[in-house]
Image 1 (tube, rainbow, N blue to C red):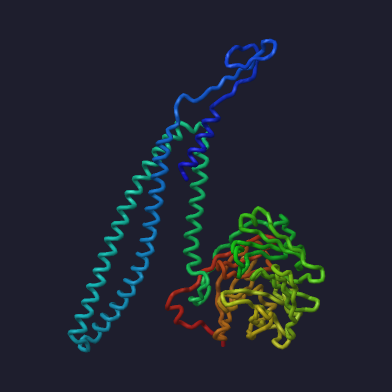
Image 2 (cartoon, rainbow, N blue to C red; image 1 turned 60 degrees about the vertical axis):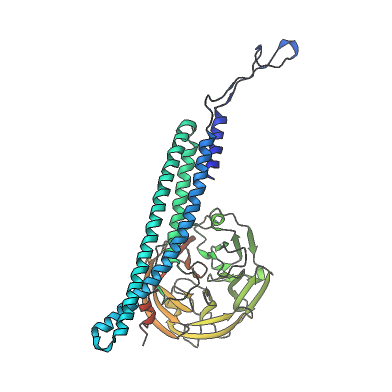
Length: 472
């Protein structure tokens, strides 16, 4: 591939060197006869040297070989990781056994001591084996480094000799930046999302700084109300799809879909759905799940959904839900839909609960309420909430640029607790905040801007064993 790019670029440069002269009259050279003795001539100037295709072929073959070797070594790295985990577990087990022996040496017989010695020898042998494997990989990497150095020297020579228009310099810088971006994204994925879909953690412990994509598709900061994000349970072939819906007031009347993030940024939507006027929604805590829009409907006051596959509308009245209680900084946020690894949820407040939040699990096929949980947090004192792995997280405003996750409720254990996880806002206010289990990101529609956050979860064994600080 690298060779092909260089060949095309250099061929373009070579063609640029060939100059076609102006058409003129009266010349007898290289012409075609015409009436009245007039003739046309053409002067062509070609480069004096021949492009060394063989050198480029050698470079391309070397690139293919290096790529193959790197794939093999990457496979070995995965094996090393597995072995290291196994060694670490064995060492921890042996350490515990030896500590027991030290505390009570008389309780162990000679046969047990010999068994421990054998296990220690086995671990030593495994470590020696791993060291040899790593040393072998190091040798391979050094060899690859030498090959790459030779490739770079060859390409640099070709570039200086033949690339007079600096085409390759620009292309190389572009490829370098692209590779850096891909590496950054890869490491980011490893750090922030080690196991998408897993709930083997005790909850959120940290949130990244706001990652601002850009202003909304209308390029208008006046569209302060709305939301954006990804389908939390994408249908096949729509895993990379994004959606956006924005307004100047707290209503939902249409929604745009984008095939991927690039088209979202370029404002190049592939679908634009306008809701039927009799099905307009209110509030901004809506979401897309399984190619279906879930939102608040006010005539009658109820939960509503629109399936974009069948274009079928439905609504369900929740008898106890009240229209009196909304979030602290946004009106008409009576129903707040959320999705996580365990399914679809909705939160609301009731007169019976005196404005305190109620969590409800939605049965997606029937669009009915399966189960409810009563919390002790007062909804008008909350900025927004979201769900992760069956746990509700409540957010409140600390100051003009800071939010805090201050409360959580675990629907599995029915335990609630206070926590403190601070994170920054990009702009002053927001109306939509939702977690997406497909990428473990938090999506915020922040005064018309697309903003998202990466989440850190507590995966340590100690944390999993410890119970949270419960409310009294």
